[in-house]
Length: 371
Image (cartoon, rainbow, N blue to C red; front, side, top):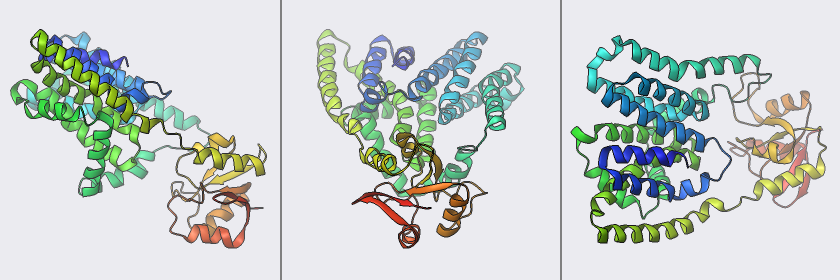
């Protein structure tokens, strides 16, 4: 929750000290942050560097001290190294530069230095890691699986409905009205930096989060929504009496959000049950094929192998029979659906396995013996 510090500093810079404190509190009690602040995942570090990058960029933008610009570059670099979607903050920065310099910003050496600090270390790391990798596991996954669907997502009503539901869940129904009021009350001349940040993160929500459909990708919308909520609460809490009322209201929302966050803590035991079946019928050194897009089933079962039907690797043939025979020739001994589920299957994959291979297990959780 170190990112709460920068949420406070950003809100304070624009709307004063009370708004800063309220923004930090709102940020801390959002259901998605309650959950992921205690999870061992890169999102927490990414949020810290992400919000810090924007704060220091704003400081440079207003004061023109190069130390702030280069510090923002370091934070931007580190945020991208943790989660690539944080690169969308760069869109807000570019729009701010166009407003300040028009396209004259392209002639400023310090901004080219900022871009190099922000992007070059990550680019070099990606090139290096790809060169030493023994197996291309997720290289270019964004270009292959996400980008082609992103353009379509902007023209699909479902994407906006899905995003609206997930944002409401992440931020909470208690805070959404405060966020909305703060956003609607914004003035372009004063709040354009925050408005641009909001717009670019909404673009990220549709282009990435709504395409991947993984809940934690919506976490990057929470810092700016907290700032808008803090702005609204800061206007309400100008006297001692109203401050007390605001804190009581936040206390109620906090209790509600902790209740609301229980949905994040619901354990999905289907992977555990499927992993038990894999461990029961296979040995540790056996190679297996799993029917899920995510590799969690391999990790949970302590096995190595492949993910089937993802249509990612050019050297792996497509189609149930050709793909399964490829895996068998390369040493695969078992195929494991997840409770009968196979990613991207229209029914033909399951049918081929049922007709040609022995099932091991009972009921919903089973594996196929390939050889």
